[in-house]
Image (cartoon, rainbow, N blue to C red; front, side, top):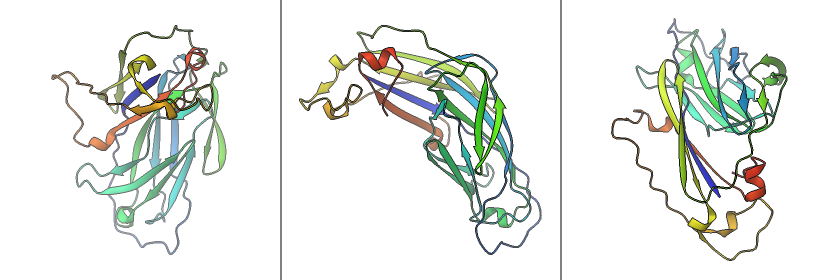
Length: 247
């Protein structure tokens, strides 16, 4: 069983201010200024958008960084990205994700642009229930609580017996985006004869897989193709019922 998800999730903006001197050594900076979570109830295995605002504080230089650890109820869909100046296409910072941690490191761009600021919109998958709506975010090693919609248990679904596809609409900084998933039953895959390593591990069985997914001609790709992020997961019948997927 395999699912495929394709997501667009980032847009940002900032202000350009006077030139400053570069710091001597790289350091951690308190750049995150707010975290806003959706207040809508979501089911386990669904996706949600989180908006974060950031601003490089005075004294920030190339090599300085900030870290964000997402709550254990969620999993990154993003695989890492660059924060770019939309006018010059210059890279402001590079964000590397090793779930559940995101580390964003500023480039020398901030040496000449004081007060650089922007927003990051992350699309996350809900992987654990949380009916209280209280979530622990760890920013630069410090835990802060933020309210969001509760995550309730997903509705049990029978195993699909045919290839299926569904999508959803989202909004990133007033830009409408579309994400979609494709589910493929194992009977439609080319499987080898390797033993099953664990109840949810089908990776050794896959010998080849090619997916051709043609989108509507009325749609258009983002100019920056790196904003399209995908993930692939697999599971068996028990894992599907429990919404447990292995990436």
